[in-house]
Length: 165
Image (cartoon, rainbow, N blue to C red):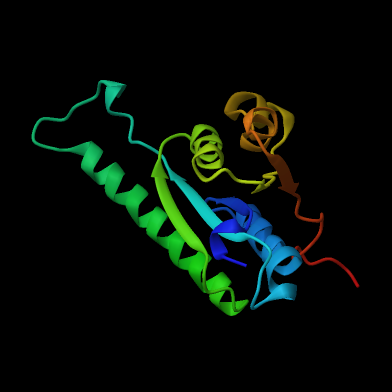
């Protein structure tokens, strides 16, 4: 079976532990059991925020935007390295990792269209109602707007938080 005929699964990652839990869960449940012939082509997508240059504060002789952008690039590189390490540790060697500038909601929905993805997996941040109302939830948005099955991976409560045995 040619690799190009496999359905595409996209996993959205950011620097949060929730997104890496989602990536690990997806690898463990969909890809690792069937290695070396996984049922999906895995594409990991990180959306790198665009520095907001229209904020209107400028300091003569200081380019604040380049500092902000350098930080965002560092975060993006860290996310990509961590994602690669996780894949390698699970013996998944053919994942594609993309960094796309923009808002995560649009970036993930666009990636689904571009790759004709079958499944989009995202983590759930577990924000409280107020924070979610202010920030808007990426998982809520993609579940309504992505043209594919959306899997929201939730980290079990108490996991890695000193849960009593």
